[in-house]
Length: 204
Image 1 (cartoon, one colour):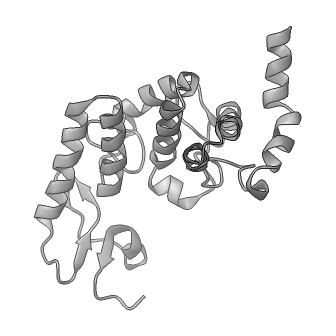
Image 2 (tube, helix red, strand yellow):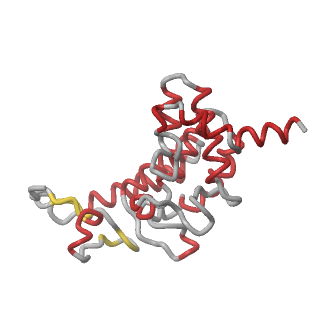
């Protein structure tokens, strides 16, 4: 009975009001509105109780049975960037959970992310055919791999970033930010320049 009551208090109507008092209500939609990183930031200030409240909220509302974090089983997030960089949300949450020793979140979350530790796909799990990657994805997953002692995965991430650097054709112009099957993606719709190319000469 006590466990049931606690679950109602954490996941039910009392919990959002507690969150509303944190940071002016900014964390009420932690994860879904791009505030997945806030748990780490609150932890760094020593406010572990508040950080645990946020992590409880994320676990109750967004954690899926397979360890992924989604708005719903059918929707990853309402934030466009979270759709483009699929595991970015997950990396922040799992890293914070590990630091807080919240293995009720970290264990399943890490197990889900391990499938990304080989080719570091940007847009979604490799099992769904996603193959393109980028240096930011590799860096976040590489740091997470180092945190959990997976040196082989961390080394693969570092090698991938080095490969991005080596393959750039002209540093005076800019940096191609996406790769697929070992080749830089250099042809893309102009409307997607911000995703695929960091233009050194652009004025805005």
